[in-house]
Amino acid sequence: MLYNGFMRIKNLIFATILTLGILSVFSSVFNAPRVEAGETVNAGFVSGLWFSSNDFFAGDNVRIYSAIQNNSGFDIVGKIQFFDNEEIIGEAEFSALNGRLVEKWADWSVKRGDHNIYVKLTDTKKALIGGGFESINLAFDASPVDKRFIDLDTDGDKIGDAIDTDDDNDGLSDEEEKVLGTDSLSRDTDGDGIPDGEEVSSATDPLVASDGKMNKSMSQEDSVGSTSLKDVAESVSQKAGVVINNLADDLKDKKMVIDEADNQNDQTGRNNYYVKLLSSLIYILEHKWLLVFVSLLLALIIGKILRII
Image (cartoon, rainbow, N blue to C red; front, side):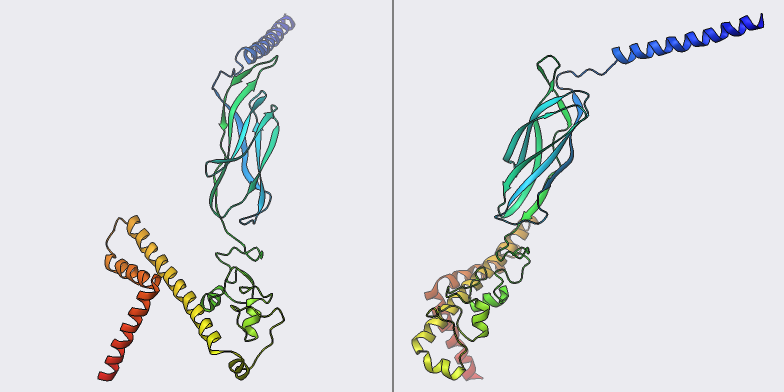
C-alpha cells in the first residue's frame, strides 16, 4: 500500500516535469521575437573607427577602418558610408551574417584643417530565407565622431608645423627666419643649393643666390670690399620690405583675435579705439608711399624734440 502511494507520487512528479518541458518548448517557438519593418535590432558598430597610422599629416594617404557586429538573430545587408565633415569619402555594400563580425575600410587623402570623421550604416535590411528583404533599424547605426586637426609637416620630421620650431629643418628657427626674411617653409630660400642655416653660419646672404659654387666664408673686410653699394642697398631694401610685410601680418592677426573675442563675448566696440589704431597702422604699412611720408614726419618731430631738449 505504501509502495503504491510512493509510485503514484513519483509518476505525478515526472508527468509535471514533462508537461512543463513541453510547454517551455512551445512557448519559445510561438513567443520568439519577430522583426517587423523598421524595428530596431541588436546590430551595428562595435568599435567605431580607427586609422592605418596613428600620426599622419596633410598630404598623407590614410586608410580608415570600421567593424560591424550582427547579433540580431538573422542576416543583414546594407551600405556603409565614411564621412569627413559631412562629405562622403568612401562607401561600400556589406553583408553581415548572424553572429559574425564584418570589417570595412575607405582610403582618405588627408588635407590640412579641422576634420570630423565618422561612419554610418544606411539602407539596412533583413535578408529573408527564401528570398526578399525587410527594412530594419540598427541599434548602433552611426559611430562616434573622431574630431582632429590635421597639420602640415613641411620637413617630414613627424612634428606638425604648428608646434615645430623649425618647419623646414634648415638650421634656422622660424622666428630667426621671420627676422631675416627667409622662407620658413623652404630649406633653401634663394635656390642656390645651400641651406639657409648654412649660409648664415658662413656669413653669406641666404636671400641672394650664389654663382652655383659653394659659398666660402668671408671676413667682414672682404665682404665690404667685394660688395657694391648698390647690392647693399638692394639687400637692405628687400629685408626691410619683408620685415614690414611680416609686421603688417602680425597686426592683422591681433586685430582678428580682438574682433573674434568681442563677437564671442557680445562686446563689439569694447576695444573700438584699439581696433581703429591697428587698422590705421595696417593701412600705413600696406601703402609704402604713406609709410615713407609718416616716417619722414616722425623723423622731423623727433628732431625738433631733440633740439628742444
